Length: 222
Image (tube, rainbow, N blue to C red):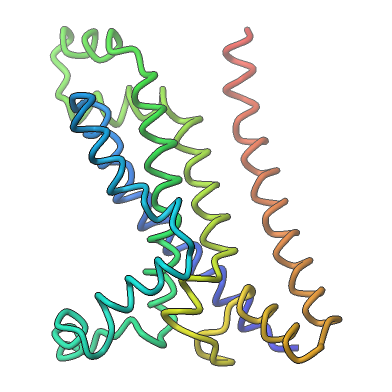
């Protein structure tokens, strides 16, 4: 049994999740503080990948990072190529999962009671200290939900991934693309095996999140 699709999918999903966290948290924080009209316009841009078909997202990524496109040619000079490489899958997965992280975290930040931040300011704490020691812990549940959703979305991504990196066994194959290729070749037994692997991983992730959330929920009830 070739386990590369599993290892590659976990690698892509983990890196994509980390990327969406690093980009989504600051984007959500600053967007939550913008005027309503500006925030609405920004939402349209940042959440488009969530409503567009994944193949359309992959097509736009090819238009930007394709080997014959200006940016793609520029990056190729420095040995960076997103087309038909596993790390191109990270780019595709991060693009489609970013809106989930952004919207969930933004909702958490908007529900934050600013009085807590004002209290920290009266104690002489910096905005950076307040953000990491007050705001982030208070918004933990929403942010954790965004992380889980973005990881699960990245793990199951197919459309944009197949457009950008294709399917090459031992190189770019993921669980999603492997399932499709096995189904195309009438190998339903192995396709079902990989489907179950994906289901098990997703279930384990959700169970772990529930276990992590339970202590904080108990504290609130007490």
